[in-house]
Structures are given as C-alpha cells and as structure tokens.
Amino acid sequence: MKTGAIVYMLNKNFNADREPYIIAAIKKSHNAEIVEVVSHGQAHFDVMDAWWRLTAKGVQKFICLFAIDRGGNFKPAVKRHLQLCK
Image 1 (spheres, rainbow, N blue to C red):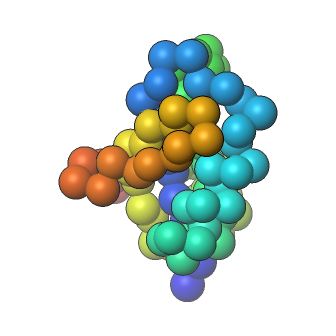
Image 2: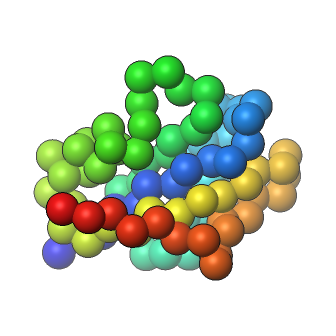
Image 3: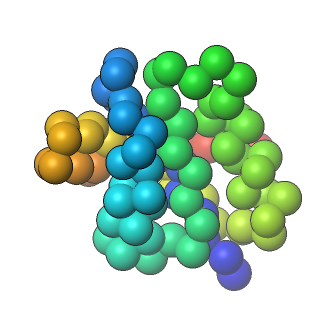
C-alpha cells in the first residue's frame, strides 16, 4: 500500500525553491512515498487537487498536515493534522 502526504504550508509568502527540502523531510519523518505541497499563494492547486493527484498515482493511505517554513527551519505542525473524508 502506497503512502502519500499532503503538506499545507501556512506561510503566506512560501518560497517554492524550498519545496524539494520539504518533500525530503516529510518523506523521512512520515515514511511517505509521495508528497504534494500546497501553499496559500497557489491559485489553481489546493488540498483536493493534491488528493486527486496522489490517488491517480495509486496512493491508498493519506497523511495530511500543516507546516511552517521559516527559512532554514522547517517544522510540521504535529498537533494539527487534517482528516480527509471519502
């Protein structure tokens, strides 16, 4: 069973250049095979789009969480997970 993670960045000015670092950190900390990053500034990509993309890639187990990136200090908001309903 593939595990995928959707990370919603809480930063209003999220730096997309940091996305590979965030993906690597989430893969390692949450044992996710595929990670999608969603941020406030993206006009046509949201949590639902990320869910569809992961589903199309065969993901059956989903982790959805909030995170904050402060330059070199990336931190998932551990106490605030989202629940996706079918």
